[in-house]
Length: 202
Image (cartoon, rainbow, N blue to C red; front, side):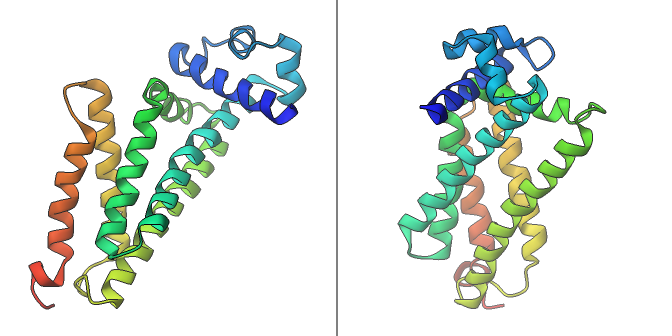
């Protein structure tokens, strides 16, 4: 029961922060959204800042877990698993599209002096984790003979994550853009370039 109530507070906070922004959101609004009293929120979180960081962690976990599960279930070639991870991550974001404004809020608040040390550390760990997962897949592809050996996995992973971030950001500003379709096209080009069969035996 306690866990369910805490989860409800975090989800309500995600909605309120996404809609109103961190500075304009109030604990009273979050409590109302969660169907609890204001005092109940403080039973789980000492401050609005602590709750905001919990929301950040919750959103990150939702996307990361969806990508990992999709890839593990699929099996098969490394290229197929890379596609599965990216598509699952994008689908996870799209399922919570109303919350996507939170990502903008996270980046904005990260520049605030009171949040900078904490959020910079979290972003650094988060992106290192994402890059590490992609790097591991690329290296596996090289070891299995699927991918060319003359690539820099670290650079490629960083560029790929930046591309997906950019696709989602553009889709947030322009709802005529289909992020899944664009990501699939991008991955087709990327994986063709990586493939030994298509790129040549290198």
